[in-house]
Length: 198
Image (cartoon, rainbow, N blue to C red; front, side, top):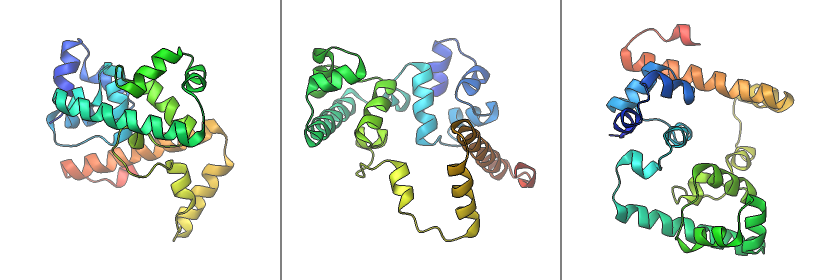
């Protein structure tokens, strides 16, 4: 079970406050904390970021596992940088840090925070999951979706509307869909009627 409640209480944050910070319902946060439901990776990253801890801290993983994760990040950063043909200084300039600070990421002397990981992933056009070694597919979700064989008119309509709207509209669509999914899953867990969620 995740250590969300333990870490949250140590920081004197209420479940409602944390839920608001990560844009989920308080009841959903309670399900995460009691282990009755697991957050998706995006939400897990957001919870870790808001609590200012690593994902390993949330899972209560040992230092050995943390060292293994650092090794994966180090390897992936080095491979991606070499593939792109850029220097550590180029990466440091992009991130707005010193070359030595970036070099520490590649040598494992320092671990990038979640915000930095997101920026690095965007720069190399890969997912954060790939950087962390949780996925063997380096392509971004956007690239993967371009190859999907959309089978229904509903899927095609959703993609078309999403692509034609503004950036703000896209964010609202994503948030609305995620909220609906949360409501449906909560209804399934509690055995209530989910028809009001859609």
